Length: 256
Image (cartoon, rainbow, N blue to C red; front, side):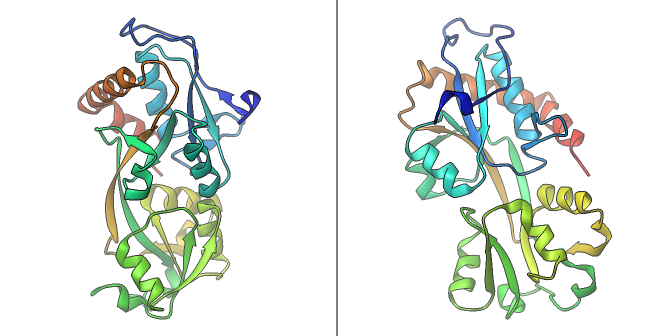
């Protein structure tokens, strides 16, 4: 990854520990997924993840840069090749843990639901399980973990997957009747529904599919100096931000 492709987000601010301070820039990568991380109207990277990272690295007096890639496969290549030091907001899976050392503290808990057009909500009840959704065309985004039961249902032909490279397209595809259902976390779904200006046409099935904790992952064998100290200090600052109510304040800023 060329240095000019990295977007500078913050400068050095105040020092928490002189042992953590380095001249080298800490490289953070993710994919666009509003309101977690996105380009605002001024082409600036913004969002829940960005505000949390900004708070922590200012406390640690670490200069950092963020890059947003267009797809999950592209992001996977970044951390496999060790072209970044941290990856934003992942749930823990065995495959990811081969390459990422996740923080001890999660910064988000997100509930995932099936979203459906309001006009079709009575067609899909989802009371007993995924078998209730037999025959439905469901939007699937490459690189997302979902659940083992979800993938089993896909493999068994219960639901028909319609693959998409960008999660931001799922609500659009739902509104265009390209899919019958999309499985999204509540933050992302409601944000894109609001952007579509047709949020009244979209609803969710009442039963959540899963609730997951999300962590930022440190790239294993990162070349960043003192990375082990950064990991420990990161968790300490994040824990304090949660207990002080700062994380809830950031979430409230982006609620729709």
